[in-house]
Structures are given as C-alpha cells and as structure tokens.
Image 1 (cartoon, rainbow, N blue to C red):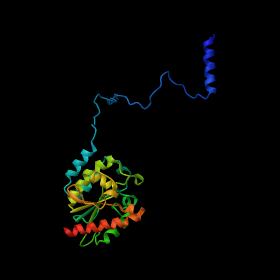
Image 2 (cartoon, rainbow, N blue to C red; image 1 turned 90 degrees about the vertical axis):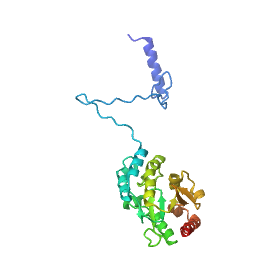
Image 3 (tube, one colour; image 1 turned 90 degrees about the horizontal axis):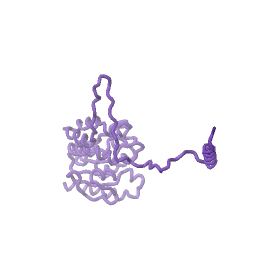
Image 4 (spheres, rainbow, N blue to C red; image 1 turned 120 degrees about the vertical axis):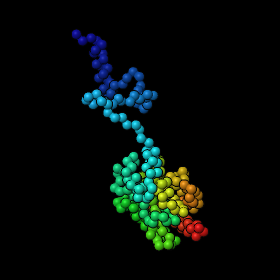
Length: 257
C-alpha cells in the first residue's frame, strides 16, 4: 500500500515540473570550474605477457628547436631541420614550409611575420599584394631580392601559415625563435629590417610598431630598423610617408657602411 509520503512527494514533483524545472540539483552547489588540487595520472595498461608499454616524458618544444637549430651548419640544413620539426601545430594545416627568398649573404635581411595564403601556396615569403608593395619599396631605393648591386634576403618569424591568417601565438613564436636566430646567424647580414609588430615582438621583445619604427636598435647583436608591414600600408596608405623616410634611413645606413 502506498504511503502518504509517496503521494506528497509525487505531488511536489508535478508542481515543480509545472514551474518549468528541467533537472534536479544537489543539496550543496557544485563548482564546475574548480580545478582539483591533485590530478591522478592514469596508469598505463599492460599488454598481454606482462611487459609494460614504453613511457614517454613531456617534450619541451623550445629546447627541441634549440637543439635542431644549433645542429644546422648551413641554410639548407636549417631548412631540413625546420621541415622535420614536428612540435608546431601550424605545420599540420599549412601547404608548404616558407623558408626564405632573395639572395643569401646579402647585407640586408628582412624579417616578416608569417606567411599568408599566397606565400603558403608558393612556398616563398612576400609574394602576395604585400610582397609586391615591398618589392616596389625596395626598388625605390635601388634594392631588391635579386638586385645585382644591392640584394636583400627575406624570411619570416614563422615558416608556416597560421589558420585564417590569424596573429601568431606567443608559444609559436617561442618555439620557432631558435630557428630564426640560427637563420640570421647563417645568413650573416649586416643589418636587419624588422617588419611589423610580431617581428618586433620576436626579436625585440616588445610591440608598438608606430612607436618603434624608424629608430635604429639592436637585435641579436645586429643593427635593426623596425618598419611598418607592407600589409599595414595597404590598409593605411596615409603612413607611406613614414615608410619612405624609413627606407631612406636604411639606404643612408648602408652608404655609411
């Protein structure tokens, strides 16, 4: 025989349903954002026969990048080391490794930020609209990628295109910076041209290209001149006057030796 408590509980349940209740709650609130102080690591299962699976320690991608970059004794070896580097997730979504363009050994090395769609497709830096503008800017001061008297060498901080051309992440910059540093060392330029905010972040440890541009500084022991990115100049052509002044300063620096 059903008790009065049963019917009372059932009536309360129907009343709650009519009020719109969709789920029950506990006596005490549950903090679903609380991180446990101790997380127990799952124990690896053992295969048949009793032998344990091999265990793998966490890999430090920056340390791995430093090791791989240091082992490269030429630009071609560095390209191969970067191609073999598996710790940057950008590689999985990119078509091509974008290593460099221009003339190795040139006095000027230009450091861009990351490849875009056109660069990812062709495997060369600065080949899209921004690259075409860069070529015109360099030609205006009698320089170029394959210029007979005043060639330049070009690369990027990141060799793989970020999805949807998003900004580079700090961890991506950190793990690829050892390759960039070795790239500069092997290319052995006299001066660096740091193009854009993220290149400044990687090489100078700070951003704010509007404030930094046009002022000579030091990056990895070399004279370095921050400049606006050509893509920014396409969006904001009113700043081309400042970019022209920076180009003239670059030319004057090279003339002074």
